[in-house]
Length: 214
Ligand code: SF4
Ligand code: SF4
Image 1: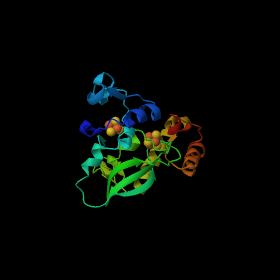
Image 2: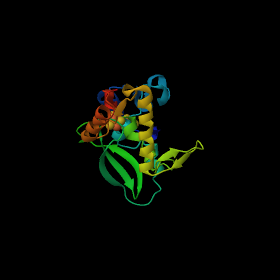
Image 3: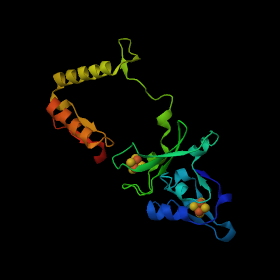
Image 4: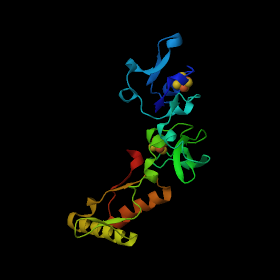
């Protein structure tokens, strides 16, 4: 979060959204009159405060006194910003987001004000953790460990055969309850159903859970 208090008009929207919407009370006003300034408790840095970096203050600031550093990083790119409605991929809450793109590049994320699950709010992951989408280290093909101990690119069939072989070995050696499935909270109901079927019918154990329960 980039802070430039020369642009601040002391509207206190950031203080109110932090206290009243997030329930966090991480920021407030210090001093009075011309010396008024938004600050954390004991005027420390945000990192050491109660701030959870949800970004709600950035979204509500009308002047740019608070800004998203990551969005500014892409300011030099040519072209208009397009908005595409989507769902945050991180957890089972399923917050609605508007993805901001310039051409093929994802440059920022805004919470959807009419999102049924979040109504304009996001947590730090949904708001800021989008670098993985176009990160050069992101895997684009399965990797399978070879005899040499190194990972090698493989087809999906090869990778799935290896996984199946590993499951079979573990069950033969340690029994059916040695397998424990955790379904992804971002998966649709149909995929969650298939996951429990896979664990219950495939391995004969009821050790199945969902990350949304954690
Ligand atoms: S929302 Fe922006 S302009 Fe308003 S008080 Fe906070 S930092 Fe200042
Ligand atoms: S709570 Fe956070 S991680 Fe979960 S869907 Fe909403 S923004 Fe994403």
